[in-house]
Image (tube, rainbow, N blue to C red):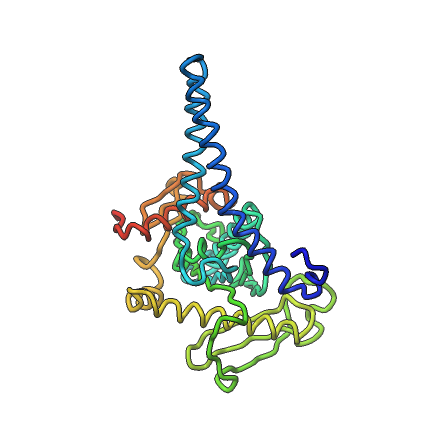
Length: 332
């Protein structure tokens, strides 16, 4: 990074900076723990002379244990693509307009969480529903271990609430599907034949400046053998949107390859195709009481709105990492 020509190639430079940030996120806390351990030894010796320092020692031990616990969680992020950025897509499923509204609420939750982590967020694609909410949307979330943390979010998310779209005030159950892929670079080998990809062009929709709805700048790619779709309308030119859509398509195919290498690949694919009751990975309740509970890990919180603000999501991500490492099935 000290070379005079380091920033001549901006994309490569940004990847190097991101790699450095990720390494510092591990090495920094380890070095800090080593220094704190030496200081703690001195503090413990001082307690013998001044018992009033007992609470200070206890507080320092608890702080160090918290730092160590976070490092142990990072050690669980050892998958082949865990250190990459993430592409996260949200699709409204069963539940009508309530499902579209629920999908948009989830989109806000992930954006809020990413901002709290200091990650960069880019909205690559958004398809608004005519009545309310969204049909689907795709985010690029860029930061250290973004994919490693978020890949456990893949699956069906279920919301139970009194519907704001029902004049009779009835309870409504809605579903949204989350798909997460690693944002792999060109060094990752993914075999895609151009003849297997159909390209469609359409006009971008939603906010975005004067270019929106003027030209067919948005691009949608469909991988015919798998049916995987990648679309981008966030850039100003068709060329930029095409390049981003191809990157998204490569990322999703890389995720397919990663799943095939996992031990329970067949079960995961069978579960992914299911929607509706019994298929969800997490339940969110606004009625009759506020709570959010993960079906797989049993982890739960009692503040729905804090969850949707992104404040509680990290706890669910950490719980899933520990759950996956332990191999223990949570009680339903």
